[in-house]
Image (cartoon, one colour):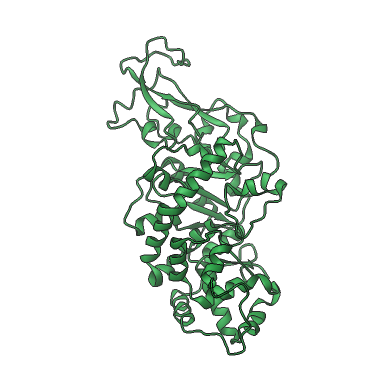
Length: 445
């Protein structure tokens, strides 16, 4: 029976989880265990799981799997696909000739380490092994602070090695190919609703792009420890964009976060986290179709995000719009009000906060056509902020931080810019084992 609305969820004590991690290192199959499918003299169980994750031959992923999982754990996870979801533990116990309590320990460890996802989180029935993408493994293993006590800091270093020496290069090329081929990706930039409230176009704001409505339509909320920011901080870096954890999960996804030692929060706390993320200039994203029923709101930055930071750090020549569709909104800057943050000192706030590199300072001549009707022209400060609309993703954080209120949000795209139906649902997208997931999964259909 699943968790009910309002039912309190309590994670297992840290000491109990650590005891499970220690115990499973001593577990062995019984003498009557059945032979392992797909394991051959030329390919051990780690090689099999690398193939299933589409990391054939990957040294970095193999080191990660070997650090977190025993061979027996890997074998149990592999066989999961062949047993009845309603009787998994019993069938696995028979297959490996092991006591039921030991199988349950292995399944619980897989859940806590971020590779197993139960259909019913309360009863732990119906486990699946990383059902959609290895991104879930990254997020699950790095967002659970209990793992630090057993597997860190080496866990952070191994993920960093994978991100910066293998996945980053592969992901960079996949994102660029998607952009060059004009293949649509299924996420869109979330505009800061606070910025739109003062917009002359506020009546055009739709519920499915309003962060308040996205939060309001759910009944359970949680905040997870940001896997990307924990990864870089554990690896010796600190995030230059924010000091907050703002990964919001809803309903069933929130249950998973709470059971992995994230924190259940109220609706108001979720709204507060949303506002912090926008004011820190983090880029929120949501599914690119007309619905408020998302399972999470992710807020990314160019300093930590595993789909972004490696590209910036190692190659530099990167367009953040390779990752997302634009929102329907853009900032409009009134040069008659903009003073280049002269009174604030330092870099102009809009330039500093923009992760799309879409805002620059330029000297404008009096009578510049971009002037939109301030009470009076202020050309005391010749350098004004200018937006490059082609680069702008429409997050609107610049509107929130402008000290002179020279920037307003404008709706620049029609409602039908956002499809009414998910392209993933329409295409029937299903994860293919042995096929790299993510952007290039679109090409596999």
